[in-house]
Structure formats: structure tokens, C-alpha cells
Image 1 (cartoon, rainbow, N blue to C red):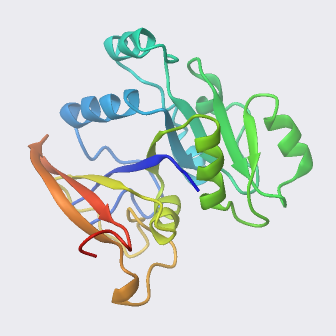
Image 2: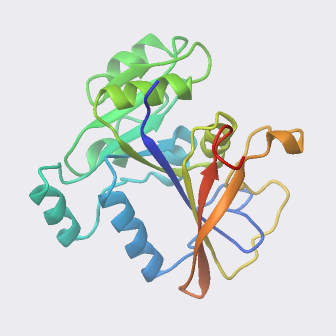
Image 3: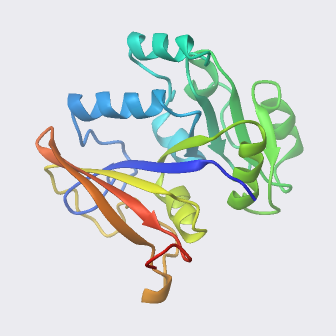
Length: 232
């Protein structure tokens, strides 16, 4: 079934961590990368995060640059991309910044097992998509997002959601800023958490197409090699 083109964007330390073991947000990149991410966001139809990111960081996922907002409006788009939360248990706080800051549509993806009262409350501030019984069925969700007009989807975290997207072969492009620091810790999250792959045959294979020095670190951009692609 058709689905959006999916771009995963992360910033990690030189040892592959996206935050501390306490899941505390860390400033890994700087002004250049922040501006790049804002451009990436402004060029997307939607931005998606997992509930863990919402609870830990309370992001708004809005476009920050007035010029980029003006460009979106000139293209006939809303000021901000559609903001999507993957939230199996419908735990998103009603006062979360992602629901309250900036104009535009919000989508919350939950499961059949989510608390009905929470689902009802959230349905008053966001479009609810029910996909899956205990965990959100990401394949079904992306199919539904395509149906409602999402063609380019940016994913900003966290590691559990990104790991699940890679496992389901639902990522097309991976942009990774590597910062000039070591965070350490066996329990600190990585860009692709979750159970991971067991064998090399299951690994997601990438094709590097861009390297750029930025903010004291380096930006790596990769295309994902899908099974069945020529050369894979």
C-alpha cells in the first residue's frame, strides 16, 4: 500500500547516544544544525514523534523561522506541518506543547486497547487514528497518513519509535548529526532502540550520499536500501 516518504532525523553524541541514561534532553548540535532541522521540518507534510519524546521533552514541533513559515503559506500549506504522536496507550497530556503551540492539525495514533476516556478527551484536540491492538501498527498508520494527504514525513524520535520503523522497513532516508561529545552509559538511549536485529541478514543497510562538517560535528545523510531494490 502507498505510504509517505519517511526521513528520520537525529542528533547523537560521538558514542551514539541521543540523551542521558535519565532520558534528559541534551543539546548535541548548534545553530547551523538547528536551522537545517527547521528547513527539513518546513519542507515536510508532517512531523512524527513517539510518546516517550513527548513526555520527556515536551516538544512543540513547530517551524521556528518566520521566513520558512511564509514560504509554506505561499505554497498553500499551513504554517506548520501536521504533528503526529505515536501513543499506544493514549497517554499524551492534554496540555502538551505539541497540542497547544502553533496552528495546524494534530494526529495521535493509538491502539484498540487504549483507555476509552483518554481517547475521548484527546479526540477533542487531535485527530485520532486507531491502528493495532496493543502496539501501534506502524505500517497501517503510514498507510492511513498517505490517505489523508501526507506524502513526506519527518521523524524526530525517540529511539524506540525509530527502531520500530527500521525494523518494519518503513524508513527511506536517515539524517544523523554526530556531535563532539561522549555521553556514555549502557542505559542511555540510541537512535534505534528496542529489541534490535538478531542476524546480519536482518540489518538495515544504508547508502551514504552526503557528509558535511557542521557545528563542530558532522552531518551524515544516508539512503535506506530496501529489500528488492536493485543491488540489494
